Structure formats: C-alpha cells, structure tokens
Amino acid sequence: MQSYALAVALALVAAPVVAQDTVALPSLGTQLAVDLAEETVAACAADGYNVAAAVTDRSGILLALVRAEGAGAHTANAAMAKAYTSASSRNPTSGMAKTVQENPGAAGLVDIPGFLVLAGGVPVKAGDATVGAIGVGGAPGGNLDETCALRALEKLADRLK
Image (cartoon, rainbow, N blue to C red):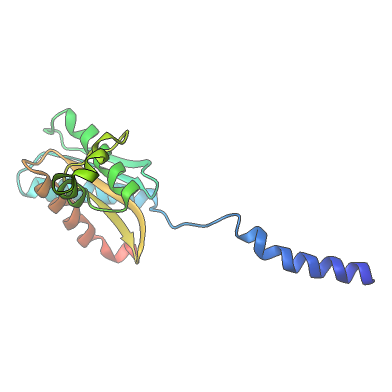
C-alpha cells in the first residue's frame, strides 16, 4: 500500500513536467482559410484588380489559394511567399519592407529562403494569437494587395474570436 501511494505521489509530481513537453497552439481552419482567400480576391475584384490570394496556417503552410481568372501567372507564387513571410514573422510584410529600407541591419531578411519582403502579406489573428496569414499578389501596389486582405479580415472578423 505504501509503494502504491508513493507511485501515485510521483505520478502527480511528474505530470506537470510531461505536460510541458507538448503544446497546443491555435491555428486557422481550412474552411475559414478558403473563405478568407475568396473574400480577398473579391475585395480586390471590386476595385478592378485581378489578384491571387494565399492563406496559410500559423506555421506558413498553405491552406488555400484562389487566383482570379485574369491574374498573372506570377501572382500565385507571390501571394504564397507573402503569406509565408507574414505567418513566419507574425508581422505584416509592409512593415518588414519598410524596416529593410530604413535599417541596413535588417537587409538580410530578403535572403531568408521563402521570404518575399514586399507589402501584401498580413497575419491572421484570433485574439492575440497569430493563427495564419493572408498573402496577396497582383494589384498595382503592395499597399493595395494589403488593403484587400484587411477588408476580407474585417468582413470575416466574427469567425476569428
């Protein structure tokens, strides 16, 4: 009986240590990713821009890609790279591009494999947690790409609580 009580006591002490070895992190679901990509392309289309929109999970892995019929072939790759960059850095790519221009010490960001440090990538947040990112390519300026993504996020904000 005494050894049983000791085993239970040790298990209770050890349980918190084991629990720290794994983590559960929130990430964007596929259906919302598809809806965000569609809404982003629609937001740009409303302004007359043919774009591609890529949506990744929190790690930068592609969940959805939508390309307007008239968008250039390069827009899909640009959108995916912007989304990956934003998800990985947890920042809008427009801010990263500005930092690279203003801070020579940050110039190496453009050399990170897979990064595209141009405006048009925005993190997707649920509360304070980055759960994914949207990348957009094809509007006549990264600031316009970013605006389309932000409008899609605003429209679907109630699903990110």
